Length: 430
Image (cartoon, rainbow, N blue to C red; front, side, top):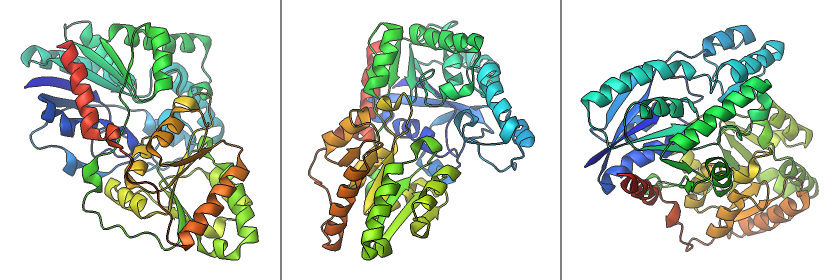
């Protein structure tokens, strides 16, 4: 069996969307005669912890760890955050007033490629020694954080091992890049490092077609799209009864850029004209939520219908998806939104519950929704379209007829199949 070294900052007990892609690929790569070896950070500080995911790590998988120093304790101290506060990517949405803005500036201009940069040198030192003593057939780095690609690139400079750079999100096209307040020097540095990774890696993989087009312009060579997906085993043997409320559930972080204002306005309109709808409506937000979104909900007279669910295990999230009447997909209102396919969309699809998406209607998310007949996507300002969709859905809900076509084939997005796509790519290099 061939061996592949996977360099990933996110690994259980890290939770959230960042860990799912490679936890699942590691689970299934052995089925395609590839033995994964995981290299990850000891004492990492991800935005979310989910200890239950440790149970999904296949038995016997070798996991290598090197300690990492991260500047978040200092950041929390100067911005007045508690030590237990979890920080999102790029420090975005973390507030902190003037000191918070200064911290974001420092993050973008001095921590290049990201705040995990201090992990590069010790990781390269450790892995060079490891690779001298242990045979590996290929390397995969997955980012963000793009520090992982820097580690792989420096190893590639010393050893002749095929390397795949896997971009779960873009680098200089990430949604918060413009908010980093970069100097011209820092902007050039980010672009230079991104270009080096794209050119020195043997293959580049990303998760959406729009992002692949961008990378191809820089690399001037084929970029492979291997989307995120769902693990069918997560959905087997679930006894999820449908919510008796007309609930609209959003699973995962809701930052300011994901505020679906058209939805709140549409719900307010319906509630004012239909007291029964108002009584049965439940807006379920599972995970963190920006204060500005709560304010939007309040301004549209929906606070009484809001149900906040703190972070729960991935297994419980799947249960919530399966039992919800409608699943909300709020896409970032940012310049790169055409390439954004939130990982949760694939699990929404596997839940076989109607998806209501707010975002660009000609984007990659729209393509996936249409291909799987999973629901409808409406433009950011299409309040009337959202209202019509909800009124129609509520009528079906009252008749116990709210469902989607469950006969549509969605197996192209099964994690096991997608792991096979990675295995084929690895085979082409070895």
